Image (cartoon, rainbow, N blue to C red):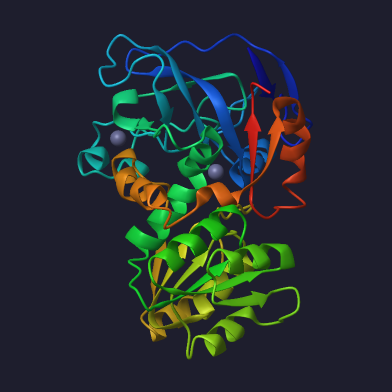
Length: 347
Ligand SMILES: [Zn+2]
Ligand SMILES: [Zn+2]
């Protein structure tokens, strides 16, 4: 099959022929029809993820058709339309037993712990636990964006963030996950303040339901701007980009007893990030992490999509071929971009 492969971190990836994957006993091989290009793929390519072993094929937000099943798979058969959370649970550890597959102790992640979906085929582990059926009227391109960005935003806003209607939500960073969060929060009856350096991203945020926008390229103190717009600070705030500056701005823009959810990855040389903890103590803030979403939690999100309360299809702003993917992957470092780019490996 054809796949995007890199041999060294940070050096150009290339499209070439590699052996087709084979399913594990409990796994499947999926023919990839669409796969999203995500900043996490760029982190994998840059060598920020210790799980990645070279040579490597990136790609973790995918949708496609089951091509082959392992002998112990009972719920899925060849031809089924499916997607998958980017964190695949083992189904049997204590965390999975509690329903928390997104923090599974033996988790696998396509595109990180093994070869991913920038390819014609991808192997997925523990298929009965992790696959999610894609409704016939949902396109592969839209379904692909559900596996990482949209599901991550849904869990961050609804489960971890415990958003209530009427609350103020600040979203720092309006790329794919941030815009998804804006849409989900607005559909949940919250008032959203979107923060980004890109006027294009803010324009999309407004279109997707943001009540207020803060242009971080022009406003020196975005936290102060959020506190002013929300009458004292947001109830819930997300760092959807992942940087020391956006993390601090998110925490500093909260009101008393507000909740910060860290969604964007925070790579750093020593693995730590400074956080304004003094404010967290004085204002009794909650600081939370969010890491994908388990397959069993998808139905509520899919129902929101089905009823058109949220429109993940509008987040897909461009589709490219596998041959375009190496350059697009490299470009993510300098231009995170607004909206979602989807790779169609068959094109
Ligand atoms: Zn597990
Ligand atoms: Zn992703």
